[in-house]
Length: 294
Image 1: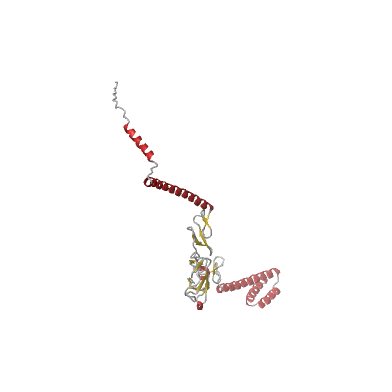
Image 2: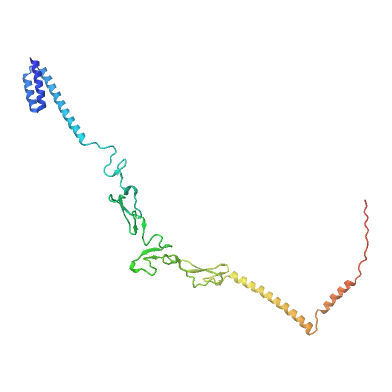
């Protein structure tokens, strides 16, 4: 019958389609010519299409499974190379993370050494991290704002150093530790004090109201007036003392040499007054009686 012929033809077509595409085309042509009704032909074509789709899907799934097994998927938050961090923006090498090199040294990652890095030190620094400062001119080599200058070892001066301190004004010495004293040969008058300031000397007068000048040798007007008054009072006192002495000497000369006593009459007068006071009768003693009345 037409139904059984269509079924057998469909079976043959399915097997032929799996083996090769050319057999499928041939089988499809045969089925179309032997089928008598349009409905049975449509059913056979639908079955063939479903079978072909299933076979293709199975093949693709097999290829995908094989590919997955060969190349594993990367883990979450995976950073390429030596980068770390949530955004892979941090380098994990020792130089970038700990920055171990000191004194402006350059750090180089090096896996061949135990520390994992090596430091390129600046001139004058040594040590694994350039921590040793062996420079001749350090920050504290020259004092008092002096400038340190390294010199050639063949031109070492008498103090045995290989550096030279260019000292600022008013200082000298190997390390600019000595202050220049320009007051060695300067003598300030009237108790003035000499000081060295900015490579020049000056006398500081202790009493500027009395003395001034480069050596405190000039007297002020106020001092001159005081001195004049002092001399005047001294002169008056001296004159008075001299006159007193002359008076005493003259009186003694008159009395003992010329037997002239200018004060004899006055002296006798005083003696008579004393005698008269002694001879004057005293007032009689009067008894006074007191009576108390109750």
